[in-house]
Image 1 (cartoon, rainbow, N blue to C red):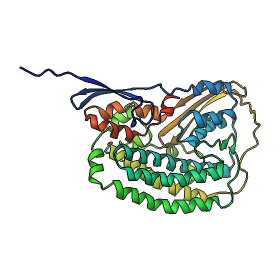
Image 2 (cartoon, helix red, strand yellow):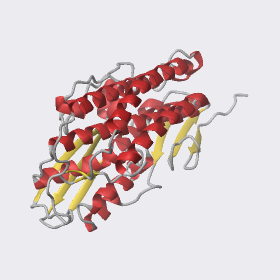
Image 3 (cartoon, rainbow, N blue to C red):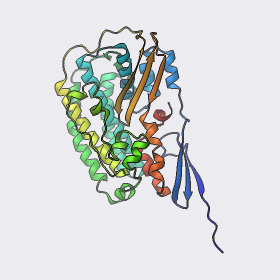
Length: 367
């Protein structure tokens, strides 16, 4: 008598500890093999785009800071304000452009450290979590000294930044950067040559280049699949066009390649920060912009390279002190739906390793 077999539908989440937020994955299994994966989202929907229509342009800075990706508040502020400044033709002073660039790259380091530490926990590597959060605490201290906030800052303003740096801040940042490069070497010693880690991630969750493009993947996920695209290089903003840095690209498209892209990105962020501080000009930190500024009629699309990828903000103005419409193109959203391509054909035990390698934030997905 033949054994009867059938597919099993497994619900992972929305409260699973390794889904990094309120995400539900509907996983169809044939034994241990993944047949299909359907992400179910919307549990964290905040209606931030609609709320922006009822707040002034200045008030919306705080909304972008808190209502989108909570690990990259400054990157959210940057994307929104670039759109505001393009519609209003607002010039940003050179010093403010460099200050923004420094803050954005510190934010990238902070975000990547959260990803690496929590992914390590997912894979059973507790030590790397402790190491990463040790360094992240230093970055949060630097943020607090300059902006007054550790996680949410509201530091960028239309036309510049809120206030200048405190005395000795750049020296403390440079000292941290010098030390941090050695810390990245420690992470490599813990993980890169570890046979258990390699068995979990090398060759697992492959996303081919053509499928990455078709699914709209961006940021480290796309660059790990051979897509050589970084908004900072393709469409330079702030001071990025005046600084030298490399864009790490790998061809394998697996979890290990996504890990290597972010590890190298952290080194490049340090390189950018060091150059920006060396070139930091004197002068004004903000253009003269009214608190309740009214932008002229018009529309603009601004895109930035957030730690998770291509963050876009489309803004429409009808001449009032609040936007008529704001639409956000969130990198976590497109990267999340590439999961189906990454997971199909792998084992159920690989689900968490693959999901963690994507680095999603659910407030960025749902908004």
